[in-house]
Image (cartoon, rainbow, N blue to C red; front, side, top):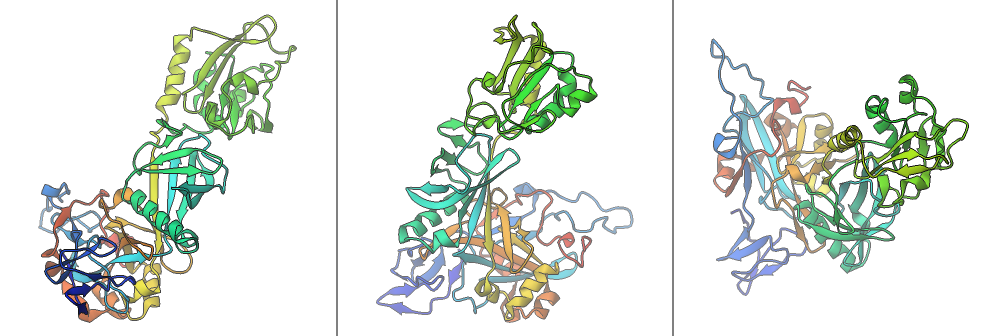
Length: 499
């Protein structure tokens, strides 16, 4: 485990200066955050320092051979066997950050001197973006999302068959009551550590969310992500339906599709059926707002699909016309035949061929999942732990001279000012996140670059240590969680093959 320097002790209690709380900790006890403890007078980071090892025993992949002549046919883009990367998980924190980061380690990569700066950042302004694969209504856009009655975020715009939440952020962590900040921090930590969290949307649903698992909405576990909107579904399966039925309606809260009117149907010479859809016609065969959002057919509030149909045009429709209505997940479907009065009559027996097409719709749906992206920013103080001239670190990241990772996982860097990153928590080591009771989330972040670039940007050269010294302290060795990704791969840098 990593020991932190003790700078003050009073009556046998040592002072932890890893965060602004500055706890005094008795021997055998931990601080307010449970991250640091006093063990025999030493201030110890209790979670193990974690390294990534690309070895066979850890599940890594090996470059299998050298070609004739002994020169490696290899550019470093995929991980070398036995390569090691020190993550910030369990590395500890420095506060205030004019001090160098806890670990600044050097090692060679393909003959190039590299350096990785490792720290567990204290993020008072961070958040999480949550993608919920479902077309079911979870609540109005901008509605508050609550945990234990406290607002921790809000519903944001639905995207491509998924509902989206924006959780955390500065206003919930620091701008509300103490309880709001504490609950928000706890919610973010548990979500990012892949634990299940129950939350309630104002005017909407009760959600049980866990990264990498199906969402549970109002007690019902979602299984399928819709195959597409109603119009897209028509386009995908029009050819299968053409000679099987006379009309198909794909019921969807966003865009309901009608085969005979849709361009796909026109090109396949599907004849008009005289069907009328209650909703706002966008373009031929595509209808908006056929019903209110809900948890029924295709994310609408209807349980009877006939509710979206008007009377068939008697000049076009005819008795015996065959109609299939289906939702975008294939969860709901019905097969109807028009009677003498041109009224659709539900058939109790579904022809095998039609059942097969419904099954194909369902088969083409992706499994419904909850995705959680941690979002944070390397602020001025954190950057000062990397370099004496923090803006140069920002420029180095912008210039692709420094690579940002979170627990060894790739981090997406937002355009614009600062170093604002997002990382998929499923690609990070388990239990990567902690907290401090200020409140703030603690998350790993690493900056990797050439040693010469680190020197140029004003790095803490006096604090650079060889990787072997850091590895001696590591108690947790894991394989990379993202196949083919490696923070030191040359393709990550402008000077490398991807530059």
